Structure formats: C-alpha cells, structure tokens
Image (cartoon, rainbow, N blue to C red; front, top):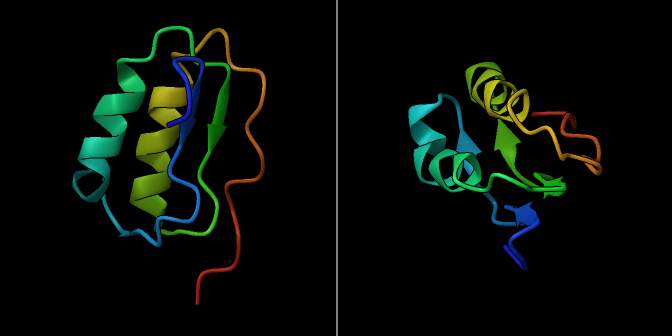
Length: 74
C-alpha cells in the first residue's frame, strides 16, 4: 500500500481460493474508509476470493480506480 487512499497487492504472487486466504489483505482494505484506488493484478485469485473482494469493494464509496481484477487463471 502506497498511501491511505490507495491499496495494492499487485505482484505479490498470492494464490487465494477463499476469503480466508485473503483475510489479512481484506482486513487492511476494510479499514481504508476513503480508498480511491485498488490494484490486485499478478495474483491467482479464485471465485470465492474474488467474491470476498467484491463484498468489500461494494462498501467503498470513494473508489475511482480499479483496473481489471480478472485475468486467466491456469
């Protein structure tokens, strides 16, 4: 994370299938009330993990930048 208005796990090479796999990151994101920018790329995120991210993002009213979260998972 680079500032209080941005959140990033870009390039951390995380392999998450569930919300539990992402819990430390989801907790951090939940605590950023005025986050404007989020980055999730270059990680391997399963359906349940993405659903958990979506639930958190729905609460972020200041969000302005959210590049594509979905890339091919092999």
